[in-house]
Image 1 (tube, rainbow, N blue to C red):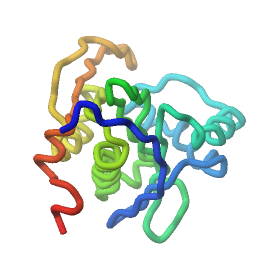
Image 2: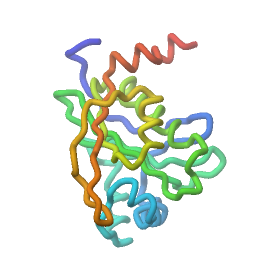
Image 3: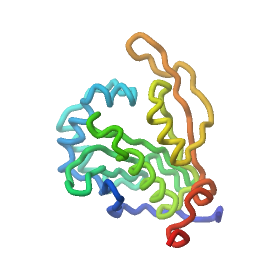
Image 4: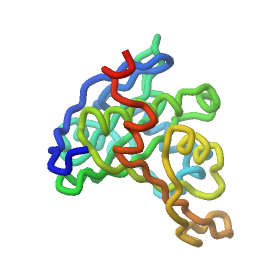
Length: 195
């Protein structure tokens, strides 16, 4: 892969088999606010903050114009309503790297393949459209379902940050994982090669 490759931030809608991804807009604030107040979702992501609807609406309204991140709403194929988000944030154009995050808004969307497909589609966008070299994430040790999805898509475990989260009186580790562009293209090829 070319080391001199440039990052181009673009935010097109992306169509999958089970889901679609589209840029988050102000109108997604209600769905995101509900997601941010989901007890199980907050546990899985270690989220302790509280959020207001007004703050969430302002956040959603400003995301499309951000130049260091791409934030997508996860939607079902037959329904454009927000069911979760998938994000590449802290995009560093010089180093060509980014941080990955995903959250489904409600446990009723778990175990249906939506998270796996959203992860795949966002990594594809990151490597094949944006031109990233490295995408990384952290996942807590009590979330083996997410770890499984990340490994299935191609993330590699790099290390463990010990006792970084105190949740309900117990410390938990964060597992660091990443995937590099060479690993992505080795596993999936390019869209044109797969045709």
